[in-house]
Image 1 (spheres, rainbow, N blue to C red):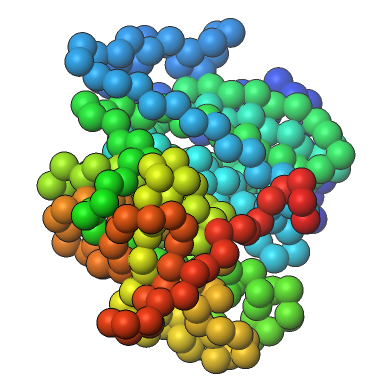
Image 2 (cartoon, one colour):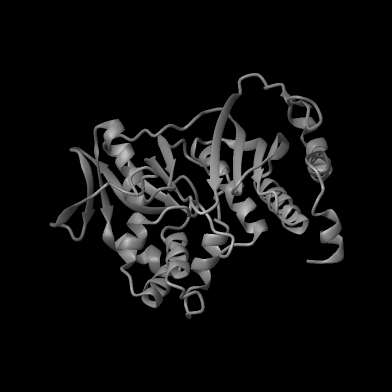
Length: 326
């Protein structure tokens, strides 16, 4: 700890709030042209929605030793990752993030340099998605926790809708963040082939461009491809067939195959159960992006299936991580 950190370690709540207001002041002024009437500094922020605009809101909490560990990630990465997890939900609704609120629960013994790193990570992520942090809350607690509320705007909102005849497109990457997590759990982070996975675990690479060709629906992959597709098939009374060959090609293109080899695990397991890459699954007739990959089809029936060839398919489980079951 530096001498400066030692002096600042005892700084109180309001001094830190002042630091946050200063850190996000430039961003708040940038948001004035986007219907922001009042930002940080009062009891609540005020925005004025534009006509014919839908406001999309989401909130996401990241808790120490549940979503992250401080010995695996820097404080800057922890904050950036928490913000991006919330922003992903807005993108999945076909909206663009505009404003955000950040609530921090900080251990009393947290060094000032680490608090500044949290602020820096939040600011980086907000700039990355083009959003403005306009307020939040700061409190002390036994463990670090970051709760992020993101507001977005859209002319048309995408729900988790799919219809027989739709294609299933993947926009983003699958399995890499899980491979990064497994590398940390197994203490194999130094192995060759794991760099892309570790990077994906630190900061997910969100698709930030508007979707094209008027898709029917979308969902982001936060809990695993199989589990998140399970929500869609049940909600729409349809079945989805995934193409094993297409998933294998995707794994090679993103170097997931190298990570799987380094960890000694199945590529398919990483693809189907890995969450926190926050890729988008889009249900549409035409590709929603130049980077979209066709990985399956919506068909009649119920459930999720993996098509291994023209004549064979097998049913997949749609169960996955559950905060209260694991």
